[in-house]
Image (tube, rainbow over all chains, first blue to last red; front, side):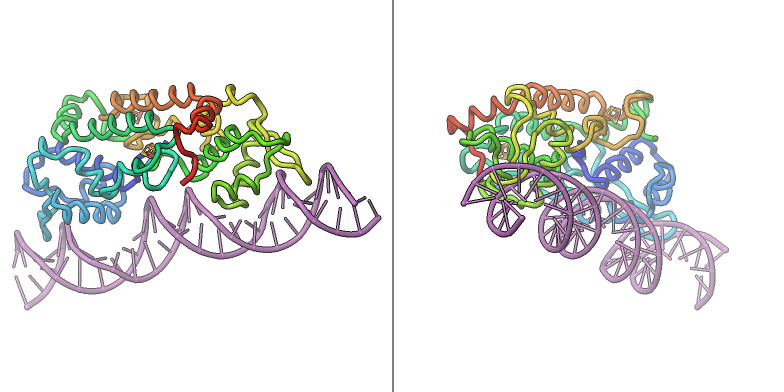
Length: 145
Length: 145
DNA sequence: CATATTTAAGAGTATTAATTCTTAATTAAT
DNA sequence: ATTAATTAAGAATTAATACTCTTAAATATG
Ligand code: SF4
Ligand code: SF4
């Protein structure tokens, strides 16, 4: 049941690393994150570039450069990351893949799927990086393999 | 939010056609289904072959041949079709893609995802082709684009 | 038996997602 | 200035998914 692309998964995990590892400097280097989480440096760079373009991150080049959250961690919700990386129509596509969803007569699984979809969306909307970061710092949950 | 592969989507839609269009003969031809649902005949043939191998369908070659449900429609659940086409580990993979799920310390979204996952699974487990077929026959929902 | 119809099997192609690679630009420190 | 460190940009590659094509096998009917 693949719900998120690798891009989104890595993006979320990487930002969870950032919020749960407050370094000394202002920026966290992509190389450090990629190494710690065992992700491809180049792939992660691409993901972060997208998040920077979408205004979720700031970046800085050169020695001691890296990326940093553009907003306080409690103001960045999982849904922001997902929509930035999967596209704004992420929650529009449906279980059986009918086109023109919701416009005409519903498909056979509409009621069920509408519920699930809104549950997922509202949860991602109500979960911030700060919240999950705290759980990681408290070692209640893991971030590594 | 792509949850099912095209294969599964087409498979479910095709079987919903079968249960909601009781023809005169014992078998429904793949050509008819593909034409009515505007799906690729060859692709659908491949999907049905898999479902036949997995014991969900019976097939018959030659004139007046086609496919037929191997069991009464109320005994075929959506979960059967999905597991047959997506693989038995369909419900094992998780939101953030951690390996060795559930064995060690949970990931940051475990509680949330566990709930969603089991909701989806139990719904697919409790929904039969017969149920959805009735809704289609009653024209409460649509099966076509 | 000959022919038409239909599924079976698998090779082949195309599209999309995932990942890697190369080169350029920016910045800090010496 | 020179060098090292680092992100930016996008081309190139690989892998996975989706789809198409070809040929074979089965079966009914005349
Ligand atoms: S009818 Fe509802 S569940 Fe079905 S495809 Fe449209 S929006 Fe999605
Ligand atoms: S910890 Fe739970 S939600 Fe996270 S990957 Fe494992 S089973 Fe899935």
